[in-house]
Image (cartoon, rainbow, N blue to C red; front, top):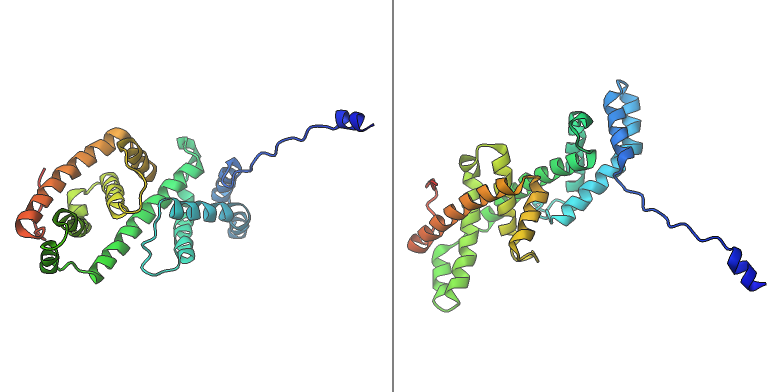
Amino acid sequence: MLTQKMATKKPRKKRTKRLYFGPEVDQSIIKYNESACSNEKSLIYQREIQPAMEKLVENIIHTFKFYYTDNVPLDQVQHEVVSFLVEKLPKFNPDKGSKAFSYFSIVAKNFCILKNRKNYKKLLEHKRIDIDTTRELVEDEDEDQLNLSAFFKVYLAHWDDHIEKYYPRQRDQQLAEAVLELFRKRDRLEIFNKKALYVYIREMTSANTQQITKIVKQMKFRYKKMLSDYIDLGYIPKDKFYEL
C-alpha cells in the first residue's frame, strides 16, 4: 500500500525565484511615463516601482561599499539615491535597447560615486596630513610603508581638487572616480588580479576595456610624477598640473 502511494505521488515543481527587478518593472516604468494622471503615476510608482528601486539601491550601496556618508544613516542615503532615480524615470527609453535594471543601476552607481567622493573629501579636511610628524615617525618605523600610506592620502586629496581639470569629459571623470574609489578601499578589497579590477571598474561605470585602459595608463603616469614630487618635497604641490 505504501509503495503504491509513493509511486502515485507527483514530483514537486521547483519554485522559480522571482526577480525583484524583472521585466514587469520595465513595463511599469513605461506605463508610469506614458500616464498623464498624477494620481495614477503615484499609484504605479508606490505599488510596482518603489520596492524594486529601493532594493536596487540597497544592493548597490552594500556591493560597492559606498559607506562614506558624512555620518548620515544608510537608510537616509538610500532614500536620497532612490529620490534621484525617481527624477530620472522619464529619461528611461526602452527603444534604445537597454533594460531598466541596467540603466538605473548605472545611474545609481554614478550618483553614489560622486557623493562618496565629496564625503571622502570632507573626511580628509577634518584629518589633515601633518607631513613633518610623518617624517619623524619614518625615522623609527618602516619607511616605505609609512611614506606610501601618507602619500595615498595626499594623492587622493590632490585628485579631489583637480579631477575636473584633468578630465573635463563626464565619462572620463567617472572612470577616474572609479579608479580612485579602489585606492580608497585598498585596505578592504579582496581583489588582487588585474582582470578582476577591470571587471570591478566596468561594473561601476559600464565602460569597455579600451576606455578603462586609456584612463588607467594616464593616471599611472601622473601617479609616478606625483610620487616623485612627494619623495623629493615631502608633499604634492597644490597648484601643479601634471601634464601627460
